[in-house]
Amino acid sequence: MESPPSFLRKTMVRVLLLGLVIILVRFAYVVTITGESCNRGDFCFFSLPNNLNLVISPADDLHWIKSVQFYSSIFHDLISEGYLSPESKTLCVETTALGQEVFSLREIGVKNSIGISKKAYMPLVVRGQGHAIPFQDNTFDFIFSGGGRLGKSLKQLEFAEEITRTLKPQGFAVVHVAATDTYSFNSFLDLFNSCSLVKMRDLDGGGFDSSSMPHIREFVIQKVAHQTMKNSGGGAGDGKCWIPGYKRDLIRDAEPLIQEEPLKPWITLKRNIQNVKYIPSMVDIRFKSRYVYVDVGARSYGSSIGSWFKKLYPKQNQTFDVFAIEADKAFHHEYKIKKKVQLLPFAAWVRNETLSFEINHDPGKEVEAKAMGSRGMGRIQPVSKSSSSLAGEVNLIQGFDFADWLNKSVRERDFVVMKMDVEGTEFDLIPRLIKTGAICLIDELFLECHYNRWQRCCPGQRSLKYNKTYNQCLQLFTSLRQSGVLVHQWW
Image (cartoon, rainbow, N blue to C red; front, side):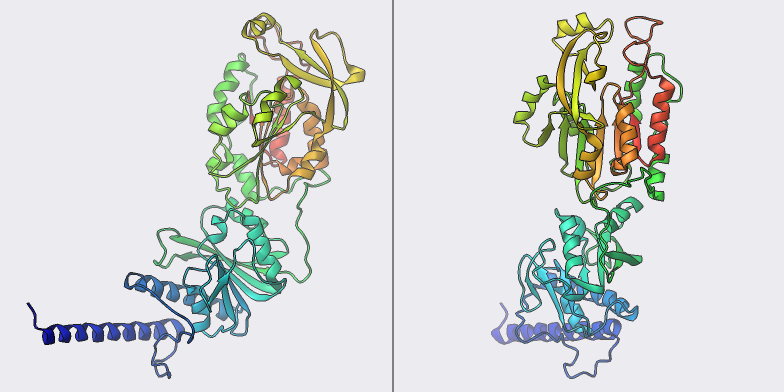
């Protein structure tokens, strides 16, 4: 057993060595990061505020130092490029737990700096969140958001809008996000109203947080002097969508359209579903402000919402607002217990008016449908054109201007997925969507086009139910892709 004097000497030596390590680390920090010599009055110790109660465990020492060094380097670059100055009133949004970003700013001379986080850490950090910044409009010259926190937020649009609101006109905001693809970056920029992109660069995570963000993309954006809101409620009024290159790339990489009319369409089109390339399987959709699925001609919940969209569509863990548009009253009761689906119990149409709704079966299917207890497909048309040539159940229902509803319900910054199965009415709805510009709001469309296809029951005979040809359907799909909509041939 060691004698007390020997143990005491060893303890003192360890304390002295620890003090020496701290001095050396501080020396390296000052010389390599801040560019200063070590002849300052504080002897190169961290110049912490007197009322800062800094408690860091030995295990966190290295992470703290690396974090401060990383952010100090970032802020030095921004000062040298003119985006930040020692006089800037600066905010760090959802800063790290110990306020390393704010500490780094104050260390390099940007004294008027503060951070917000869920937990206050005075005097560096006050309580606040990115989607609810506790400061007035036009307060800060410079705002920083690191760590990819905007991308991790469940309220990304509000997060971005709060940065814009509290930033002074002509002020700069710098946001770090995880680097992925062009689609997500453009979606990210669309979150910021009244701001323009000044600079973008890729960074190495610096090693201090490489597990969660090994690669960082840095955006420098500037708030314009006169706020001009980006389109927030609809597409182009002339029906022409501006199609950026990254959207054209998606359409180019999509599965090709079936050029030749299939002899057995019920088999060919169903097999083609296996070739479909969904947008979320090709790109990162994380920076969209909202996620919407619209099922036009939804029928029962299990017809496509429950059996396909909920189970198979790659949603990237995003929560979608689901709208079911279904005119047939026979299916309405199902949606009363589906709290996460909003039912629009009307027929999607080109204007608001009363329509004739006819339930019919394809030739040869009447007996099969009755045996299985299934319900035929419903078709709509103006009451004045209603005909008794299609024997079946006929009711009067309310149609609504679908393009007008879409323009009012979603925005260009939203991610909108749509399935449309409207028994031939697509040849009325799609031109209306294009004319009003509402088509520009749809990112991905799954469309069943109805034409006088070959009958399964009767070889060599075509259906008399529809008067369009397969070539007309193909032209419809082609026009949609040319309009910037990634449309898929659905079944």
